[in-house]
Length: 268
Image 1 (tube, rainbow, N blue to C red):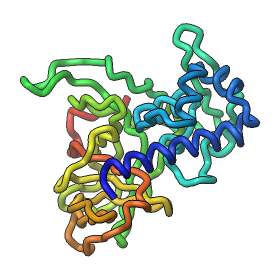
Image 2: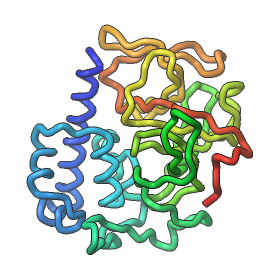
Image 3: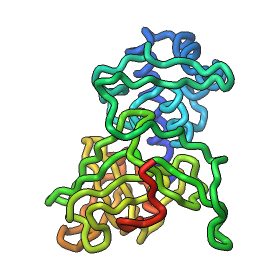
Image 4: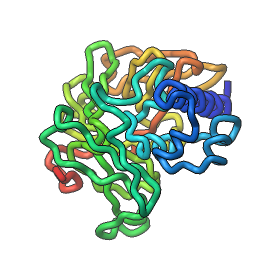
């Protein structure tokens, strides 16, 4: 299996999950989904058939419909909304056609609401040759475990725990806060990582990989060949793992590690 085959599998999974969402939460009505999210009918029909369906498009749909981040790439039967959240809480913005979700009080965290990611946002200039600084949301916490796997606790859509400055050109880039010492010494507890879902990872890159069984790892990508992927441990305490590419939901490249106390992090 090649990278191209993986991309096709990822697109097919997003397609199937979008169909599942419309079937289970919109009574099978594409019109109801379009009325709520403002997505074009022709585009929706194409996405459900054979149009290219990348992670950027999936993130945009999740934002419009106020779905859990990554839910369009999760295994069949996984939840699309946080517990107690209902699509009737989503309102359509008249000026952009995009939706804006309202998180019930029982789901709000002490963190303030964060703005949606917008690749056009820019603040100060980045170092010469690195483009323009912008901010990305910290969307969850990565808690390391002794078996080499991590758990990612996503914040509800529209809420987070601060923002990170980055010169990444990936509009789908996001941040995670690391908890625990399982990834030391490379990544320490309390530090943040910035991930780029849309940029293809290369061998020797650190990556966040989610499998169809729900398990997630932060590892070094060692190789991909013959329909398999091999991932090395960040801290060398865990042996490399080799899994079938057919079990991979996504591979997101880790582009930066932000130290604790860095001025690149703002608590919002």
